[in-house]
Image 1 (cartoon, rainbow, N blue to C red):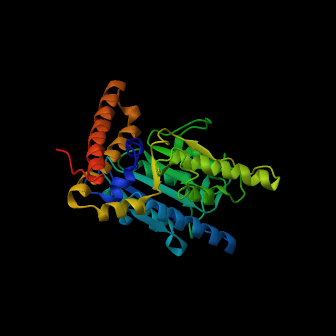
Image 2 (image 1 turned 90 degrees about the vertical axis):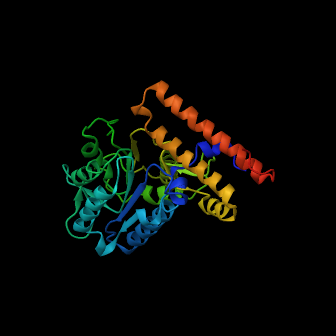
Image 3 (image 1 turned 135 degrees about the vertical axis):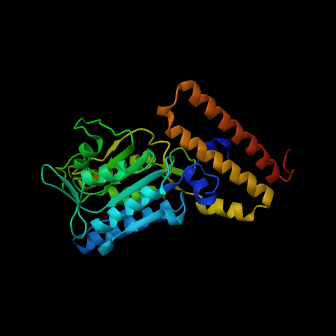
Length: 320
């Protein structure tokens, strides 16, 4: 049986994908694949997009994972999509945005390259800040993506953040213009046991970033070349925000094979796991005493339910 430590560090997405009715928050994921320009990039970007979509479906309902690519990835379609999200999302919900493709920077404005008029960094800031809630997440894997940071954080400072969301860019600034390795490595992290450092069967933003960053460094070292990209991570809560569940199929099978009583307990524990992750992401909004009180109460509930689950799976029957 998975230990309590693994479950209490577990994924909000587990609760969302397997028990959306009990979860207090929903996660909405949008993946946008921009123009490749060349067949090799089209193929690479398509593979990255598909991997991100598949990983996202392990942490939230399939109907909350949205994808734009090819001629469907137009400015008009994307703006309309975010307007729809604005009407669907509640104050406790979170959004994830993946940008896969090429970017450009003219010294003043960052643009993500899509069919027709491009989307700028300012466009993305307005779209994201227009959504309900906070703790949203953006990862931009494109060339020159670092030029997006000042627009989204509102500052040129190297460590500037935006309290509403976490940001990852594949490059340090707009002068790193080569096609990046970071995107495919970040997508790889979401299905890799090697990225799951704490072995809780979930891959967090921090774990995925660290895995991809190491991969980028190794790529250039092995090639004997100076690095042309330097990934950046800004914002708080990256270690608590999970992006994929490595054993999602196993958990689904466990639920399917359980009787009604055991299934109810498993679902209760997963819902509590989700509450713990959501509480950890709100750590900065709470006083220390209030945070610890809520966290301890949730951990105690999870421990009590885990004890009952262990007893049932050992064949002793549920405890009162």
